[in-house]
Image (tube, rainbow, N blue to C red):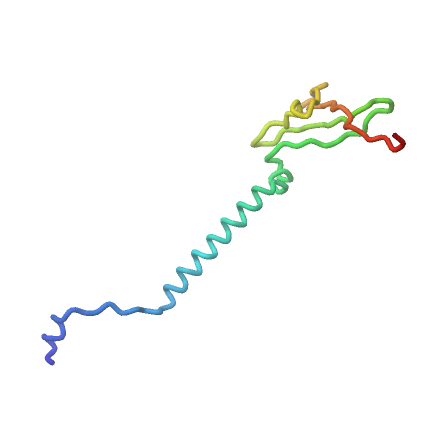
Length: 113
């Protein structure tokens, strides 16, 4: 065969097992792993709460003779303070950014009945 004849013949597509394909696949897998990790961290919520992005409540010491529990709720940077009305709690006072709630006592079972 002459050089002119080989230049006009169609070239077949050859499979190439170069490192470029492996590097691309590795990059895709690393990216997917990072996205999955980020989704788990956001869904868990603890990291966002510690960073002050979401609001939260802390249980306070109940005054003597008072039934129920007291909670202090603070807003986050992305969300406001939690609303405890669905737990039958009533908002008692707001001091600064902290809202104080009084919640009824839970049902307790008696041991001798």
